[in-house]
Amino acid sequence: MRAAVLVDANEALRVTDVGLDRPGPKEVLVKMAAAGVCHSDWHVMQGDLPVPLPAILGHEGAGVVEEVGEEVTRVKPGDHVVLSWIPSCGHCFYCLKGRPDMCDEAFNIQLSGSLPGNVMRLHWDEGPLHHYLGTSCFAEKTVVPDTGVIPIDPAIALNKAALVGCAVTTGFGAVVHTAHVAPGDSVTVIGCGGVGLNVIQTARLAGADPIIAIDANGKKSELAKTFGATHFIDATQSDDLITPVIDLTKGIGTDFAFEVIGREETIEAAYGMVRKAGMAVIIGVAPPHMDVSFNAFSFPSQSKILTGSWYGQSVPAVDIPRILGLYQRGRLNLDDLVTQSYSLEHINDAFQALIQGTVARGVIEF
Ligand code: COD
Ligand code: ZN
Ligand code: ZN
Image 1 (cartoon, rainbow, N blue to C red):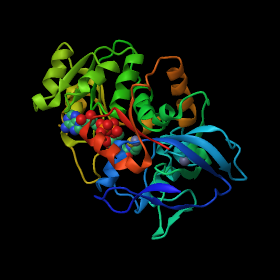
Image 2: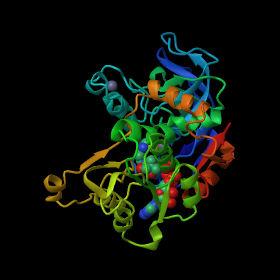
Image 3: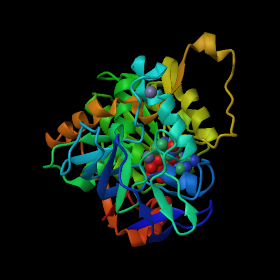
């Protein structure tokens, strides 16, 4: 089958023929229909997020089940599924605590570049080929843990459903599970990419007002407003992002700030623009060596909450169907997220478009 392989950081993806073994007892073979191009894959390609290489990237996908292992009961051949990049184990401390986003076993498979049990189902002429986030969906087919497939209504177009595998769930969950935004709360979103736009549209759904969008690309203004932003700040116009947000929130500061880039200055700005006892939610992941600094006196005296959100703190088996239901009833907009489709052979063009900011989301269609 054809797949896009990352051999080394700072190289383009190599679209080539690879081998895929049949699924093990608790695994599922999925024929991919669509895979979104997320900035996290680009972070890996740049060497900012180290994972075992060579690997097949792609973690935001949807397809049709082709074959299941003998112990799989969750899905059957023919089912339409969205892939989850946190195939939580269900029995570690965090899973039992109701926080599958922090599942130890899922973190282990991310670090090892394998499937649960250190199993590898991918190979090619040049030797071992790693899995990525248990998904590896930049390929015509993939083998994933059964906990990493979420069955969905087959009436939903798979190129829209794919985005719920990462961008939509990450943004939706940050608003709903991490922040608990309520009607009339002020929300500021720094970074209006595929993930940030979903923070914006979920904040709108939650009744937030105002919704202030910030991006260094002025072209994101129109997109941000389509998804519900009431105001847009062009980050290239000033180094100071805090003062305009305080001005737009009656001199108080924003109730919630979401950082959706992963940069030192924007993480610090997110904390700075939040009102006393408000909340800054960091979604963007910075390179592992990077530190940020905050004024220590402000912690007790301003009592702001500073927290992270990983995969929207979601429970994918519950949240993915919930989000798709909201889409089917017109409450969430997935149609305007898919702005460009690419064949697998043109996947490197899709990454260039991501970097240039010319798309809301580019999607590989198989
Ligand atoms: N100031 C303002 N805006 C900026 C700046 C800046 N200094 N730099 C970039 N931006 C804007 C860009 O113009 C763009 O609009 C936006 O930020 C980023 O959007 P995308 O579409 O390139 O990125 P997303 O939305 O696909 O991804 C954002 C993440 C935060 C998820 C990603 O970058 C990340 O941190 N990934 C690591 C987390 C991770 O591993 N997650 C796992 C799966 S996502
Ligand atoms: Zn992603
Ligand atoms: Zn677990």
